[in-house]
Amino acid sequence: MAFADNLKQLPPITHLRGLELHDEQGALAATLENKPGSAGSVAVYAALAQRHGTIDAAAAAEGLEIYAEHTADARAFPGKHPNIDRLLKLQAEGGRYTVKLLPAA
Image (cartoon, rainbow, N blue to C red; front, side):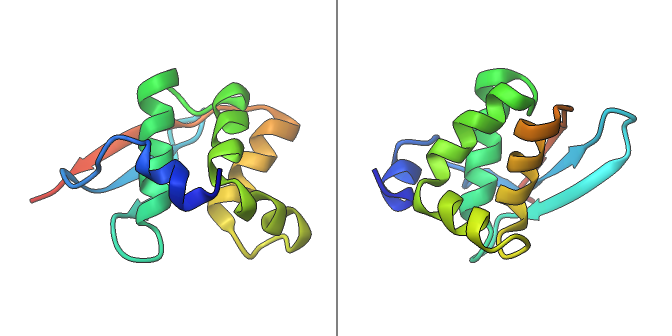
């Protein structure tokens, strides 16, 4: 399925203004905002955190499947899709991110 179709299968994120990813040392690694252009990534990462409890190599593999055609584009053009690049790196090198959900105001 295409990414747009996969997004429809994920839980809604209307209750979130975004999320934070923290590395294994607890440092803030990234903030994803629930706004056009990144809302899909918020949905993917929130769903992965819900299913796996953390974003690790197994969660990354699932996320790369959800991103569908965008994963191939990210592989072909590193840096174009930083939220997918992050998952590719986890899959290749290991590691883990904890996710902090940011409720909407």
